[in-house]
Amino acid sequence: MLDYVLIGLCLSLVGVAGLQLTYMFYLDRIDRERRKRIVQLEHRCSELSARLASARTRIEQQNEMIEKFEAVPHQSDEVWADVLDE
Image (cartoon, rainbow, N blue to C red; front, side, top):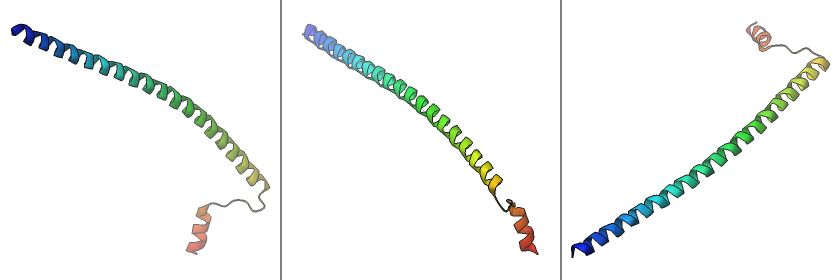
């Protein structure tokens, strides 16, 4: 009778070990996918940073052109505050 109990105990321990092994494979796969996603996000971030720098440069160039061809020079808001106070 004790032999059957020990066999049952061994089989249940083998089942638990198999479950843990399966869970470890699952965690390993999740970790690999997370690392791939991080690499993708870093690549996307560098692309967006380059686009942002390009857009800022274009905006600065456009502002310079606007200031160059503007008939009335741009006045700051402080002048309007002085006008409104009077």
